Amino acid sequence: MSDTKLHRIPDGILGGVCGGFADYIGWGRGLVRLLYVVFSILSAAFPGTIVYIILWIVMPKRKAVQS
Image 1 (cartoon, rainbow, N blue to C red):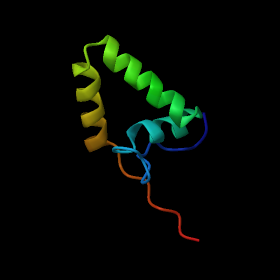
Image 2 (image 1 turned 135 degrees about the vertical axis):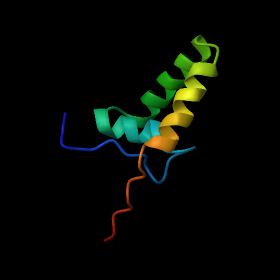
Image 3 (image 1 turned 45 degrees about the vertical axis):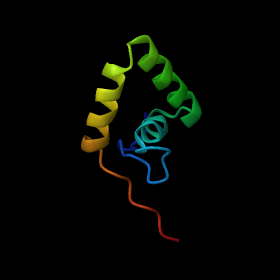
Image 4 (image 1 turned 180 degrees about the vertical axis):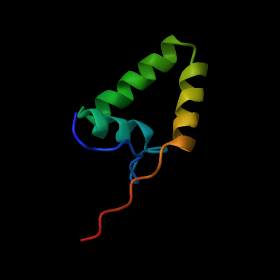
């Protein structure tokens, strides 16, 4: 793992949670989103949705990098 902190990404599809988590663990954003959808479907969608909403509220948004 790197020194990267867990943040939501500002250009995320919905809330940036999956994209931020993917950046944190070093995986592709598409793969993490696909795994999230599969997890949600297999768990009847309710737990996955609750976890996503909680993370959306709790995870800080990464500040945009200024050039």
